[in-house]
Image 1 (cartoon, one colour):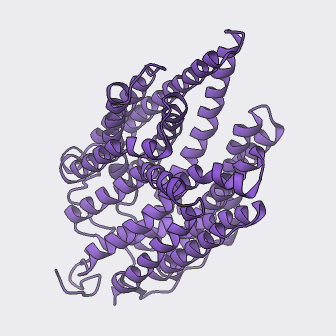
Image 2: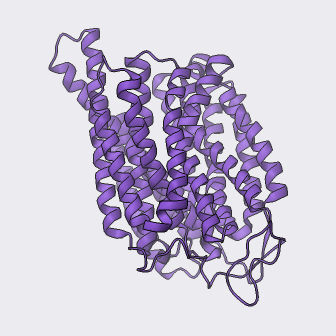
Image 3: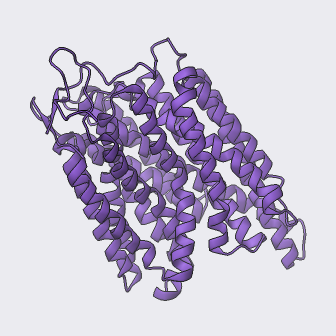
Length: 504
């Protein structure tokens, strides 16, 4: 490997890779896995935690919502802080904070304690997730190596939820629900040691920009309102005044944020980042894929456990083939297909596969079997996500000025989080309505009718998920530029007008 040298050569503005970049990838991947799998790990632990701490079904949602609200509302701030105070320092702070919050959650002896710990987890997750992607963006500057690194990162981002199902089922079934939180401490300790050794410190040569406090307050409040509004719609329905009040406030605050960014001296998120045609298409693709993928993990999990009688461990193992296919597709996509065809071909291709996989899932019934009816669409969906996520993530951070790499990376996480929130609210509401309609038209409501109503509700969610992927495919095909028209992932480097940095 090459010797560590200044990140910019005086003869050229092209950054030179540092010698420990592949170890850096391992550390970043470990941190990303911890953040991504945390949501599904905790979801599986919820019934046991509820029985242990004695909180109600109505309160149970706050274990998930507290994390989502803190995470989503603070993501752009977290990404920008990594630009301002240094990515290595921010990365390590995020890891330590996430570990402490996880330990507090695992030791919780009351509902309020657990909710507070989950909110703290979300806050440090918002610091950690975009910083991890920003470290990757600024570490890998050779196009082929960058593609390979983003293939690994994108595979983890897509497969982390399924890994969480398997790990959560194992820890809950054989240990205790608290270990679903304590496991993060173990992962974080390894990642902190790795970060201290392998992640380079990038020292600025120019003045440090200031934090856009008004912009931060506006966008944080807007994202909070957006996620809270969709979460409230899931629990209280779309006719709730609070739902529309929060969503309406979020829209107003987002408009105010955009207007402020146009005139701010030190904008939190320069509008040129999101208005770039390729990056805008990438952010939308991540958001739509996130909304569509929600139906896979949530409703397939419900189907396997309630309709086919799978245990949590069996359910987790059922997703392993999908993970394997996702990893394979991610590597093929980033190393072969994206450099040759570009995201304009690969992302719509992945969206089309996602639509096909969702449509196949609509055929599931109470007599279906895993091998014949569940496995084939899961494999297709795994290949779909492996085609969408790495290409979109790589394009979303390509060519961004180094001083804004953190906030550009945060937009990827924000898009995925908002997409998941939209998918949660819409698909759950549509599924619940479909189940209620089925029961109402098949009275009396026997156990058999209830079981069939559940399957019908899942099919409704899958059809809407297929619609999400179809819309995503059309948007990606229209917005992404063709190779050779302002986009070349195979030959692109970081922005040549990037702020000079020196690696130590």
